[in-house]
Length: 219
Image 1 (cartoon, rainbow, N blue to C red):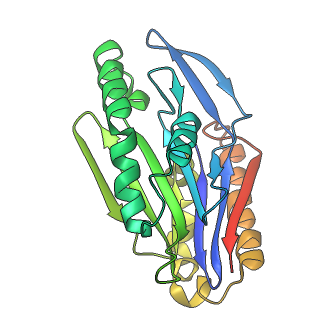
Image 2: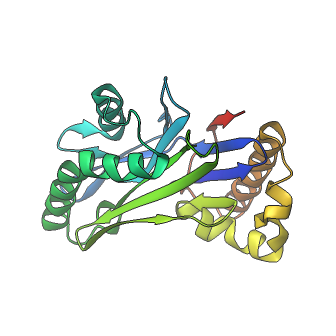
């Protein structure tokens, strides 16, 4: 239950993320809140991490895992791809353990089976921006390079934005995003979020929050 839009533009990366979080207790949906900042920005290097799917692992929030990794200094002197692989190693045990607990205790709840972390940053050696997605479920753990200029994460995309992007395929091309500055791209992402929100409201859906946070990295 989320909607996060990420764009690789001419001079950086920008993100627009909803604020929805849900809590399950003994297989029952216990609480829905719209006050979660899903964007974690590092202080010393151009790197943002965000999470969707399960966001608590062995009583540690996804943000706690990110904070722990930043404080570990393991990322120093690494390329962006090396940081992605190292972050995966750093959080893997907590994540796999929690997902297996979830699936054993709540086998009929689809939403507790998987988590995703997206790392957006600048490779300091090459000077190029990029983003990688790490995906976990009890069945697999893998990372994949997103070879595109726009990635859209969450259930809000499938129901309320996918068709719009299919009908306007030029919105996911290097020609469009590669010419946008961060400021222009943020504006475009806000428009896309608004389109998804309007479509959601038309059918009375409740898959993501009305409000959002934005963050960016740029030269």
